[in-house]
Length: 439
Ligand code: UD1
Image 1 (cartoon, rainbow, N blue to C red):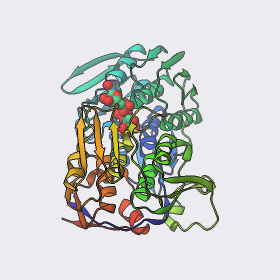
Image 2: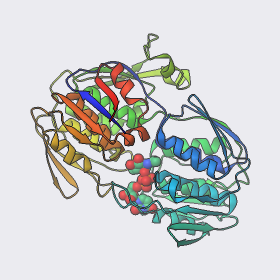
Image 3: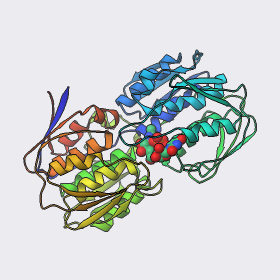
Image 4: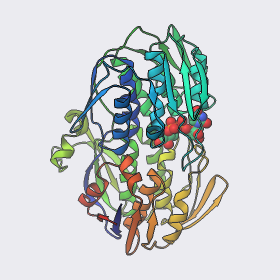
């Protein structure tokens, strides 16, 4: 077991390169199952969740090879359709192989993902959608099984714009007979990235990024090359790291238009954030520089400065383009040390305040009232031993540790490895006093 030790109080300064998006990479990896060919994905983040998805694909018969930031996936021999409990339980996104397997092989048997720390997280919307496409859904022994040779296009309305359900159904629809419409679809940038990838493989999808996605089924999809979009949640986390430490940093490779709601809220709070053309004097290390397509990564940078006193603002999480639930914990860390009162309301997940009890141990003043947290900015936080409970909660504790007086020791950091590439190294390059040690 390892832990992270942070000595708070350093202002972050310098440049940080943003990695490829975890939440775009996972469904795109699953989508390779739709073809019988070879796909090369670039700007792949080296994360535990990506390794888990690679294991799921191998279990199904695919060949998966990592080369630096690239992933070569050969799905020529995929003939198995069972995604087992031991893999699905470690990562809910494994459920995304369902749509592609059903569309490709006419059947899929995938372990039910079950609940997780942030809520019960059912998959009813995915399954109802598969039924609309003509599949027969059955459950037993903790597994869901779906059958249907030749899916038939349908009109699907999602009761909630679920990211996973939109992705699973959009993938299944690419090979269904005729036209499929998904109404009240999720609009996240990761949905658009998946649709762009599927279209590059030969799919006919229109409207991704809007409420209505229309797909006309095709006979087959072909392997292709594709570069994954940058991780907007990783970028948002570094923006808050600069704000909380009154720092001055430059993000390379992030896309500012994916971060609008967060930036609007931070502007309201008084943080200076702007994007500008990248200069030729990038100081990001060589490995970072090779992480993505040079043109796209170098085009623009995001500058973050937090020199002025910032003030408390309220936020409410919503599906995209609303404020992302995946930034709620990090934003709360910032508000816990910002003068004034901030009300943070979580509407996407039912139980996403586990970081609160750990922030309280560091001296934060937060009260939970139903789905809202009332955060009264403390004068200072103090370092303490704390425990990470999920991925974004872990990030919030790191942020609090960066500004707390004294040492913060964070245990159970395996959650961080699921979603933040080389976070200790990136933060130390920005001047943080942070290390990873064996417990
Ligand atoms: C994805 C992201 C996750 C992010 C979330 C919301 C990935 C790999 N993960 O998760 O980081 O926090 O979007 O932006 O991309 N729901 C149902 N029935 C369903 C499906 C979902 O009730 O069939 C509910 C969930 O319990 C949750 C809400 O809808 O309360 C949002 O879930 P969803 O958008 O599906 O999130 P994920 O795709 O699991």
